[in-house]
Length: 297
Image 1 (cartoon, rainbow, N blue to C red):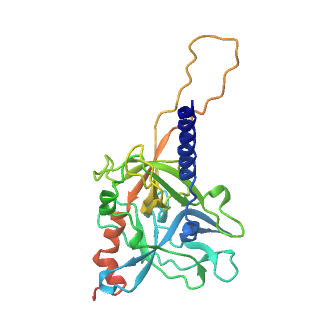
Image 2 (image 1 turned 135 degrees about the horizontal axis):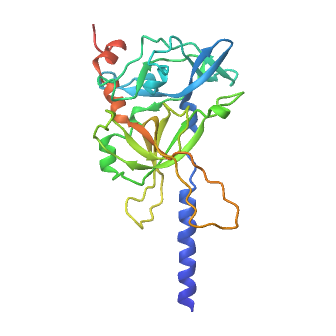
Image 3 (image 1 turned 90 degrees about the horizontal axis):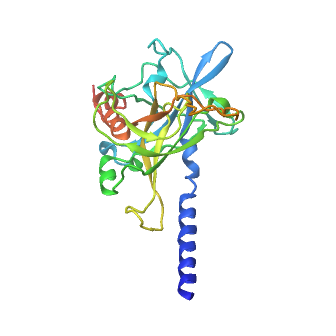
């Protein structure tokens, strides 16, 4: 009997530990890296996507971080494929703390991947002087080396932070955080010519361009209990949602006297993201390095 009681106590301790581990909150500073891409329309400015700031350290300038604004490439274009002539960046003002639209984007200064149709990422060097923001340092990128060394794989947790059009924040920008798991890691190009990984997470318009963070448990083996910080870093950039093309159908096996229960008949989907290695390839490209003065013309 005593042994059974001890076993029950041990089980409760393990259970409580797991609950506490799973409930670990994300770093508070994450949302300070977020901005909204805003399109001016007549008398108002409408947020159309998410962006974020990174600080990239080049070996040529070991003691310096170059600041870039990153978003999904398709956010910069309308439905017909024409680039928006003018876009703003919504951030919180450094002095008032209130949301403000900054006119700091040059439509000619965006840099894309050399395989421009396959990689949905756009990068622009910017440095807002009077905005309150933080950047994600390149030392916190989840590179392929990190994936291998830390044994990151399918089922590991991720989250991303982005624009919720329904409530983007009135006084301050207020990004929404979505959680999910790695669902497919691949280096293959998709049937429609894209370089994607996939995560099992919700997605709605406005999330495009959001940073995806790895938020993996420190336990790297099944049934292992390891105390300590999560494995955290920038995994990629949200591109969009891949929708299932057919609606779910309700099938009634036989006639009954009960009223029918409403069923959500919307399509299911999975979120497509662009891994951070393609962002690095843009940053290390000759056009980008020439623009910031690391390569002389």
